[in-house]
Image (cartoon, rainbow, N blue to C red; front, side, top):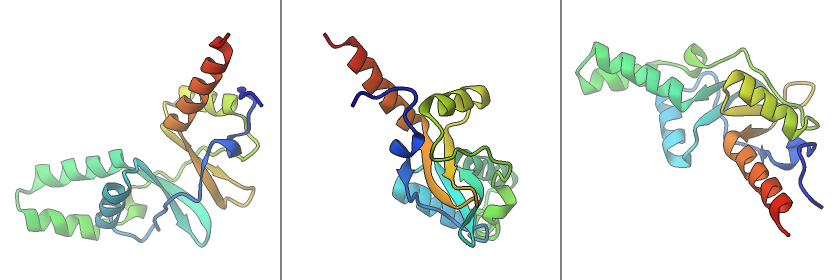
Length: 148
């Protein structure tokens, strides 16, 4: 079956993504980002998506910390004391599993996002779609259309 832009995002999303809690420290986020090679982490509380924290959020915090203090221990204390809920994005645009790849593309382009959570009607996290996921689909569509 050929891939098309009306493919549901549930077919391309990463299911059961790694998550963090709003009460986790930014030091925990750093460790998860480094270990997993992730750029975005959904923030889940009581089974529901409440926000997203990104590598960019982490870098902004680091820049502020290091610009205010040269002492490594002080910087580490700030990372351990800063909670995810203090810097996460909580005004989210989300996809439903039935939304199409075309819909996702439009949202990514209009908002310059790099990831979108996929949730059910109760905000339970089902997965995440990233720009890399979309690039893979577009590559497949392109290759299917250009083959003789």
